[in-house]
Image (cartoon, rainbow, N blue to C red; front, side, top):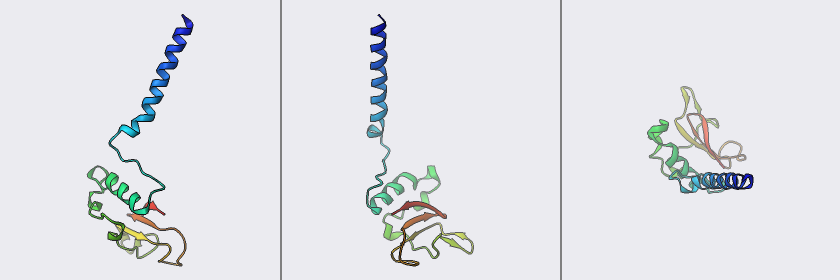
Length: 112
């Protein structure tokens, strides 16, 4: 009898683990690919976070990275605070080295 209970518990734990592992594959939520191109990562971020739920709906119109204005300063700062959205290209701006990224209100949302 004890072996049957142990087997039943093991099967239930296995089914639970399988359900948890498959839940992300079966959900409608996009999953970011950190190895994707910057365009793919931007598309994922925009589709996921540029919504009313995250108070970012005003950013939905930036469909391509090329639509995003270049940062005036490396950290996106201005005399009035931070640019709402801007892109810093490390290979083009500043000292022409380092990473590139997209800033939203001074916070990195994407880096490559």
